[in-house]
Length: 503
Image (cartoon, rainbow, N blue to C red; front, top):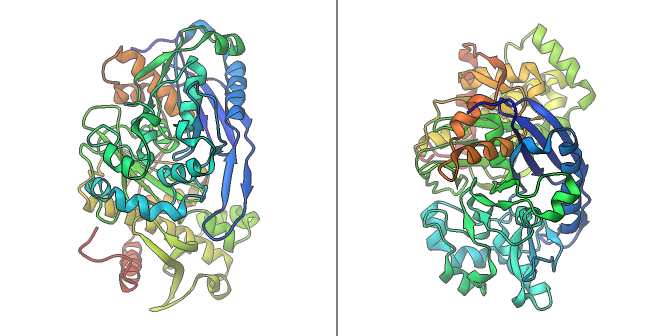
């Protein structure tokens, strides 16, 4: 149903800010607002750095952005809203939902010494799902947080989005399967693994009830209505993590569709009609809002950050224009990893970037001095595209359909030469949506859920109406690119990071 008199609100809880948007049935932006969020970061011994935020500040910021957005639209036109948040951010609350601890962020490392214990206790569950418990999981953090807090056995575990949805509705509400994943929820059986949690000293009653994304959580309560201008009872729908929300905003919503977000790092997320089991543990599958559909994906440690680390960012535009006018005939093969450790499409904690001088591997920090900044810029960007292709090779080998819509989002899509090089490397047309952000994805989910009227949200129909393409980048044939990609894979095989047979 496409109407011009309805408005949908999406709220995105990021690391540095809260963002809200109001869009109509055809995806036109009616209003947007954001507020900054402050963090407390504490350095510590190896593996113990801390990152906290104030849950009350989340609520205040949400009220502020909602008030600004609602003031720009007819409150009676708002058909519903949904919220996304950072994956793995948790807080302890009491029975009334009052926070008893800071909001402990997804990259807080206080639980790192409990990862092995969690992995061992839940091996049967995680191996069955093809998941590898890591430092970004919330479950080890929860164990550490409860040990730190007085009267922790009386507390309940909630996620960042749970704090906000409870605030909006006025009482405790379920979380969603996407948000619950890294706290240990068994997305295949649709339950908390009680035996595993008991072994870790956690009670299932301390964890929230769980529903699928898009399920109705309740209506906006009187207090939030008075603070924001929303009408009391405006539907609040269960959301997803920020990565899944960004995927929805890009329109990657049917099996075979994939969205690549290229910013500081490279994140690939798609839709599959079955659970992808990854023996390497680098791919995670979220439950989709529609029955039988899964949202697999992974986050690489490579991305645009490596360019800024090795090349002066003020020269990027100059080099881009030069490359557009005079494309490079040949480039050195580069694995563009800043720092150490890769997590997708292969797991290699000790991996480091390198480039090939002929057949001889050399450290990445020697690249600029050997070939010059412009050539290094092009080679690094091409190397990131090679990693993107390797990611798609990996999920294809796991049995995923990758033949659907291919969208690209993130800050790096502002670079026209890089977009073209990615299309050429991938041999696939790439679509850049005219607007793609997690908040848009939550507005889309809210519309699909309300239109379903308690049934299964039709994300495909909602995306067809609300997501629009700004540009399509068609691939060009280039045999030299394929030859360099083959050399790239060969260099990774020599290091034992990938094999010919394994995905």
